[in-house]
Image (cartoon, rainbow, N blue to C red; front, top):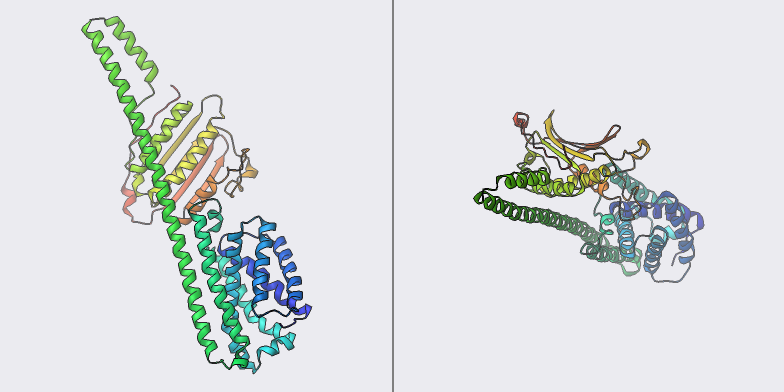
Length: 457
């Protein structure tokens, strides 16, 4: 194994480790903070310096370094092993492909050999510069485009079936990583075995396999999104089923009252009839007809939230001034957004000891669909507004809280929507979504106003 001077280790290994961490973990939406990134890179540089002095077969030291870096991330960052391994393998694979792609051409242009890289440290450093430049450009692209290959951060919050996908990703990347090692081994030993003509073709094959691996990972992400949509639709259908059961029980209750009134009419007990009807009106005055929005899934969601509001004594109002079915978001995602926001609004409204109230309004103005949700409960301090959409942020004493608004912001970002929070006299959340379809939406002016109260008055 080639021994590399300490200054070459510092200039090459440290920078390479930092980019491997930033690119590999960034593509999987995992974060390694800057301080620990430098700490990990420093540890890897020290280990690399001594490891390269050992008489190991080519590629063994790389495998040891990958496993060591994975374990260090698990210990310091508290990211589980398979997600850490997948991110490290992805970063190493990317830089391995880059190096194997340009290094043979560089050696041919400079009339150098692989042995010269070991014997001439400054040439080794100079040969690393193209890799460094390409790595920086790739990292800049990922940051600018906010490109995520697969969201392993979300996968870590679910036990099954997504964690099985994390294992599949790690296995796919492990295959590509081994192919990169084989290609690098061929490059190092090409003079000994006289296989210079094979190396370019081997690099092309490795590149193709790497591309196919990335495509497979992207397809796995699409499959996980489809699974998530199915789960959301299942949840919404369960809400509709619950609503139907409530309506069925109410129908049975009304039938019983009608039969009682009918019996009193036959007996001509008019005073008792009056008292009976007044008693029913006093107990059930708040129950009105089912809200219909023109959006079947949204109708089920709003009516189920209405039932919950009734049980908690919350005044609940809905105004529909446009056609919600035209909102450019799939049903499962719009219900996920509004379900989280309404849950938060009702939870906050319950802190108002006087007359808790929640209202939601749908309207269309200036080529945008606008959804407003208000509550008169606890206010949001001005200093916390910038943090409420961060994952895990909550003012509740529960580690499982704090992901609802994060999910809302991610979904709105996917559909180029905006969300604004105002909390002064009351708390208002305003969502705006551009109408991407047509210009005729502005002519769809709905004057239908559906409103009900469950608290009194």
